[in-house]
Amino acid sequence: MYRIDIENKDLIKLEKTMFQNENLRERYDIQEWIEKRPEIIEENLLIIGKEVVLPSDIRLDLLAIDKDSNLVVLELKRDTSGKNVDWQAIKYASYCSSFSNADIFKQFAEYSEVSEEEAEAMIEKFVNADDLEGLNENQRIILVSKEFHSDVVSSVLWLRDYGIDISCVKLTLYLNEDKKLFISPNKIIPLPEAEDYLIKKEQRQKEVRRFKGRSFSLEKSDYDNERLIKELKQSLDKESELVSRVIAFLEIILEEDREFKREELKQKLYERNIGDDIGKSGTYLSNISQFLTKKSNPHFRQIITFDGGNSIGEVKNNYYVLEDYRDLLKKVLNDIIGDYNQFSEN
Image (cartoon, rainbow, N blue to C red; front, side, top):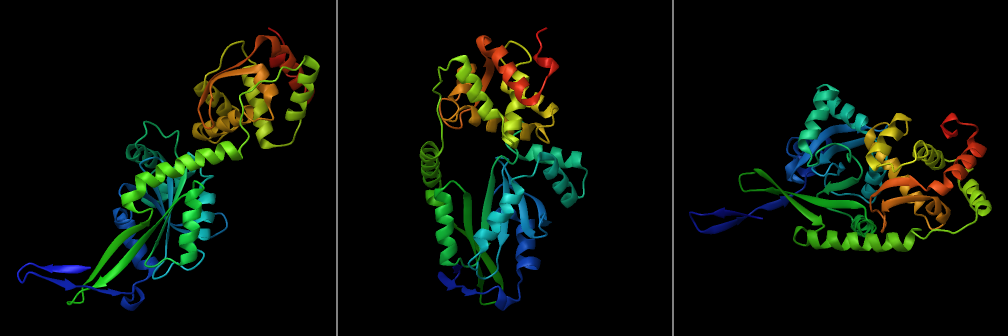
């Protein structure tokens, strides 16, 4: 980096220096700068926590939200990243992935010293979305250091290939002839000039892997009733959280002989305590929809119709139990979970 000497029409080279050499520390200097000026790392970040204590008593350097409602984990190192900063940040992001909207509002309220209602309003004003339904559906990781170990660079590139939104920002410290310090941020992964291209490429690769790696089908079975009952019982008579949510979903769409819209189902799942908030209930509904489109579950598609879902991740709507199978499904659920009044004919 050079300082421009306009008067003498010259360039004065600035010397690189180490944070350690200038007695600058990771926690009490770099962290404070980024907290106050997050735009040095990325435009449009709202810091919602510093030194956030996670369930295992480890501390996350900085936690933020971006305009797309993603939680952003910022992991900071001083002069070198070391070999394990990527794994460290992944652990933090995995913990944060379980944060409900209420958890996020509480975290931001404690950090900002405001009420949870004020914190919610501030976040809602900040993000691009019209509501906070999609808050924390995805998580991002930003690693910050003066230098990055080659092992970390290799891991980050590999993780990006598999759909993990992780980036690296270098902070270079300079010293001028008057002993004044300057700092220069530089995103090295992904390079800003190629970021749009790389993101689109990564999304295409991710979609291809999802089709290859996940079981997805809209084909329906054509079983007779005896075989259909057997298949349904085998799928539903299992001890798992997903199966219990699927059963609750089936109970709901059997309540009335009509189509059930996605938004209505999210509300009804929430009323059954499936999800700490509407956003989480929506996530669970997406899991149920994925269950319905698994290759191994053509028997569910034989009895249930829905709109959309022609490709993986496409939003589905208007769920309906076909009239010919309503009594059969009620019988299966009664056999598995006992006698329920809502299954009796009105």
